[in-house]
Amino acid sequence: MQRLIVIFILMFLNTSRAQSLFLNTNGFSVPNCDHIAGEQCYSNIVCDVNAKYRTIDGLCNNLNVPWWGAANTSHLRHVYPFYGDGIYSFRKQIDGSPLPGARLINLKLFLNKQFPSWNEHNTLFMEWGQFVAHDTTDLPPDPSITGGCCLVRNKYPIQCQYVINVPLNDPVYSKFGQTCINFVRAITMANMNNCSSIPASFPVMSTHYMDGSQIYGSNKQLASELRTFQDGRLRSEFNSNHQEFCPQRSRTSSQCESSSDSQFCFLAGDRRVNQNLGIAVFQTMFLKFHNVIAHSLQTINPQWNDEKLYQETRRFIIATIQHINYAYYLPILLGKDFTAKRGFNKPAVYDENLDPSTAQEHSTGAFRVLHKEIPEFFNLISKNMHNVQHAVITEWLDKPDLLPYNDNYDNMIRGLMESSTRQEQPSYNPLISNNLFLKTKPKFSGNDLLAIDIQRGRDTGMPPYNTMRSICGIPAASSFDDLLDLIPYDDVQKLKELYFSVNDIDFMVGALLEIPAKGAKVGPTSRSILAESFYRYKNGDRFFYDVLGQPGSFTSEQLKVIKSITFGHVICATSSIKHVPYDIFLSLSQRYMQNYVDCGTLTLNLDPWKEKSVEAYY
Image 1 (spheres, one colour):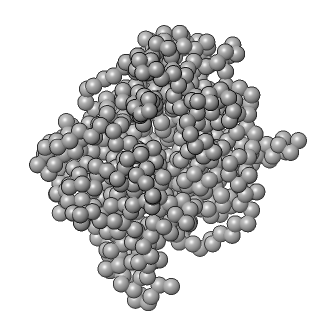
Image 2 (tube, rainbow, N blue to C red):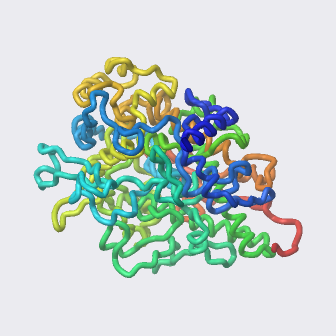
């Protein structure tokens, strides 16, 4: 009875919330008890309506609903979750049989579909997507499980009941005797502040906003650990070549996440800083950019104390990230014409009724489709434009040891700029489909990222692909053959072999198989989900960089400076690289030398931040 009352209240509240622009649903259409549980878990919040700076944990961005978008609050859902028991167990097919195995789906549909031709965009573009994902999404496995689940498969604890079975004839794993891929269910809101609900829902451990939380952290304790509390700077460490990097994490062994023999283990605002060399470069780059800007602001405002310098610099860095994302990244990801038509190139208009929270369909669905862009290796390219090393991506997972040596930081950035990402295709590269976090001792053990992404969708109650089509304004398919409007013929035939009904197809599977929309990197269904999320991140954020009329709004002169910034400014300010591409996300095969920009011309005039008063800040 209590749950029915809460659902009724939520449905009533829906009528006053902003409508969705990209989906055939209300702005907040699902009566998710956890999403309103903030009223219980954050009942004593007092917000400063005149605060110029956003909080570290995302609280008080929305003054009416202070917990919207805050760290450790649940995902928004566009569609009611699909569970077999309506609560937490994996959904089944229409005929009551289990869904096809996630590894089997990869083998039948994706693994042997590899297109090695060049893509027009570079791996810098690919890595930006991960950088933004780490800012707005973070759903780790249940922390109560410390070991692997394969030894206790289909037994208690419940978090281990859905390991991924390996087919007996698996072309990779069977010859090594591997029959199981580890899978631990995600942490739920039941683990968080006693804010549990039915059906199960899942927290975003970072803030939901695009607020640089991967740099600064999402809680006060970590944010403090990352600061020097001098001159507004972030903590950093220097290698033997006097190059600046993220600080080292305190540890007593060579263990760094899943790596057992890592010499370096960086600390940043996001726990995944060491996941791969590309994200470690980005984290280092923006740490250095923060310290560069802090020094520049201190030079023109020597009267500012540490707190003022830190907050103004953080505000500047967040604005830079938001501007690059909306001006340069999204037009490529979603399509230039699409983003222009939908107003992504216009200033944000803050809507206090728009819930900015990350959608479950976005974080464990549409945004994971971009895993198809991850290359097999990173190129390290010297200043003489020689490829000095191919760093196989799976050999350096949770092991950033390569980065601090010699000129590898600069070489990695050049490699990201000059190397093409994978051609548009539904498959993931073979290494992350077979050898993710590979171990050979005491016996062979590999992981399959694509299978894990499919399984994570089931874990979080992801609606089937056909349901997602319909809320994106695409006619629902009555039969498998109706999928031919977006999915190639051969793939549709294999879907018939794998699934009992067209209504059983996993969203991740259908989204990957969709032919990319015109001018976009993803299919129409994924594009609508992504567009909805980025619309919310922008217009549901009271502190978004070009929102006017708020205590934290920039002046018109400051906005001119921010809107002149490109990713090239960041690279030039934080490396020894002398030239950057004018079209920063284009691959080398798509541009020529005359399309490079001299770093000496990419300077920033911070005079609009100079205070006229010389009084000290308190």
